[in-house]
Length: 149
Length: 202
Image (tube, rainbow over all chains, first blue to last red; front, side, top):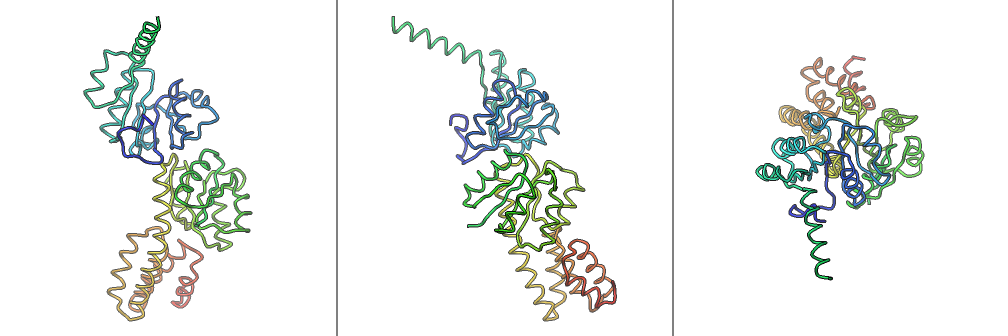
């Protein structure tokens, strides 16, 4: 599985996901169905309740920018933290806390604005940028279309 | 193959315990209620039970009390989202082996079960050594080892019983305090009760 690339291989991982939007909830269901122990943190109760039936992990209702919420999620014991809130600034803050305060071995954050990539990289946080991924996909699609014509 | 029962009304918790423990080679049965678990225990006793405190109908504390009343010989690990000191303390007073808070990591489950098996074995072994020293009247050494036992097993009543036995000859009042503490922590410890009686204290 690509997400655990680079870490010591274990049968199951303890993964904390910050943000239960469309991406967070889907990845949470996927990872829990693969047998990992997953904790999803979100401040919106409706978002947590919208998790699919297949999700077999834990949910924590709370503000992820508060240390106590992250402690309740046992971020100090997590193998991986996925920081997927809809706000870049919030994500960098939580990702930094995960990396520096809780010493989470792998921290992966979503960054919407490609201009913020450098900031995240400076702190050793792995990033997923939907804008750049879309650019790559479109580029690839156009190249394929070009080849076929 | 050691048998594990998991009692939790949350399906995800039952599923995670089953998954983690089966991958460690244990046989696992899960139950959504304490009543179902008690029924299964009557038919077949497990080696360890994972149990939640908040359960529908009979709660986890009642379940543990029922198990204690029937003097079943297996260890209990509480898994709960209740994290108050009082709840944890009252669960330990009932003689549970460990307390894990939710959410838990697979490693926490494995560590806890290992601790349960090892600690029981080690506690009994060390208790036997101390009793031997008491029989040989080597009280100083016995007291030293018992103090270490207090440190390693703060939730167990046994160190109090042993310390009472160590000091009862020279310091009966102190011994009575230890026996009383042992009874308070574990009211099934008949030896501590009879020692109290022999000291003329009820």
